[in-house]
Image (cartoon, rainbow, N blue to C red; front, side):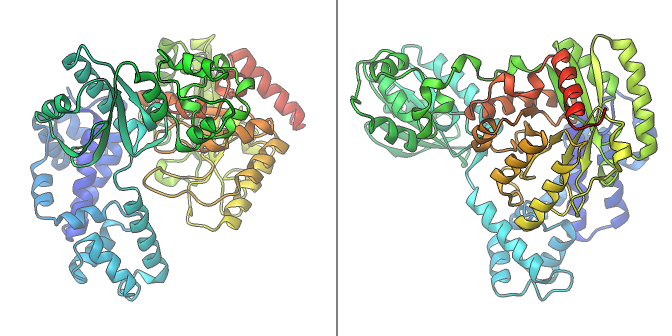
Length: 560
């Protein structure tokens, strides 16, 4: 029961109270406490009740609720309010742009208690007519419902990763005489997964008997394919084959349809059922080995001879942690705690990039706070050498394309990450104006999460990727691969174009807590799909190489 789990329960209680129209003061107290708890540097578990109640933003009433969560793992008040909330109303909480108070209006005043009824009300223009909504909000709700339904049954790679590993272990333990290899989208390291697939020599009958003991139901069965549904949500396919044809089946189920069609259209292609490894299959087809993560597009076959797979980025290649938030803004840990954790993990440097002042909701730093933070970083660098902490900021790109601080303030940082965090609902023309404005600023070093997307939750604002990449090339701006598994932005499909234009990329975790340092792995997985090498990834630079990069860039910009 960590602080985030405690905060989540309090935050959900606050939202549900607002939906039900209950005491606004109490609701606000739970929301404020959840925010405070997320930012605490120490875990609440293990602290006395008196200590918890004395913490800023908590107090005795909320402290009692916190103790209940710690001792029982749940909150009775939350259980009761969930039980009294229609399932459809709970589902509305996932719709972008529909906050608790608007849900209260929709439910209590319009009598709408399901997503389908909400969509129908929007189509009948009943939502727009309600005070506080309007046509734009109504259209946004419709768009969000469509986006949600389109993504139903799809999952982030990070969401299913543990499930895949656990099921693989169970299968290998149960069927020791048979082969099981994960294939399909997961093997190709796609950021979003629709179906989990295995190739196996086990029989469908034996698998059905095995899964009869689990919460998994059979949806379709044939001689060569068994289709299942796990937990009423995740689709699972087992491709059934013999040992002799195993690697041909693995190849056939790994590549995307586009890749497989292009592969089979090559002159001299043969169906090589007797190959004992995939490497042998590629060799027999007069092709070098193509790793599973690259078997996505037709183009990879035209340039496969120039791909040096040994040079493609690995997690172990990351030397520095770029883009991280401390408890100076909305992070959970001190800069010192973060630095010491990275030293223990073998990293060479840390780039602290707390939020800028426009991000008031995330405790963005004022100019005075920046000066204080820089003094602290100077002190820590003396203590922790040769490890180094660099002074950075995730600076908001404002509505007019200017930066959240003056150039004088920006010049005090070692590097600047520029990101859009506000007014995301904008047309491409507006988005491009803001991004190009930031890229043109001489102090902007890295463009953060280019489209602002949240996978399966929020579409990014529309951008012309080629124009942005070209602008970054012209202004020597690095493009971030934001490694948070919900972002993974820039999309991997644009990495090769960035490389063609000579643009550096940087795999950055956007970490707000120590355990989020591991986000790097998810950035590496999608970067591999784009063929990124460590020499083209800024966070793979050694500390000396990073220092040289900063110095040369300042010189090229005329800043020194």
